[in-house]
Amino acid sequence: MNKTDLVNVLSSKTNLSKTASKNVIDSFIQIVTKQLAQGNNVRISGLGTFKTSHRAARKGIIPSTKAVINIPAKTVAKFSVAKELAEAVK
Image 1 (tube, helix red, strand yellow):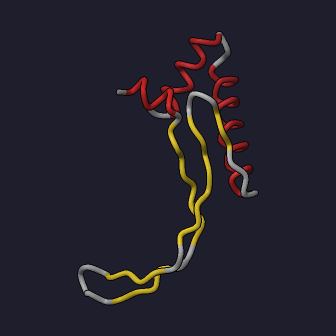
Image 2 (cartoon, rainbow, N blue to C red; image 1 turned 120 degrees about the vertical axis):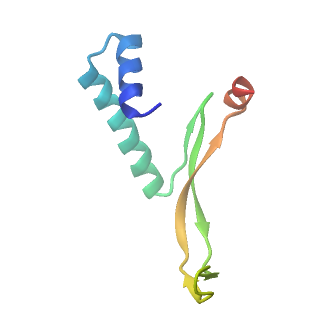
C-alpha cells in the first residue's frame, strides 16, 4: 500500500474527500516529523512508537575498493511496533 492507496481507503472509511484525507495524512507526517526533530517520542496505542536513536561514528569499507572510510555519527528515526499490532500480523 502506498500513500495514494492509503488516502483512498481513509476517504472511503471516513466519508472525507480525498483532498481532506490527504491533508490528514500529510498533517500526521508533519506532526511526527516535528516531534522527532525536537527529540520527543510519538506513541500511538495499538500501532507503535516513533522515536529517535543516536548512531555513533564508525569506520566502514567500500566493498569495491576495500578503502576504509569514516561514517559520521547521526540521529535516525526508528519505529517500534506495538504488541497489539505484532500479534494481529502473526
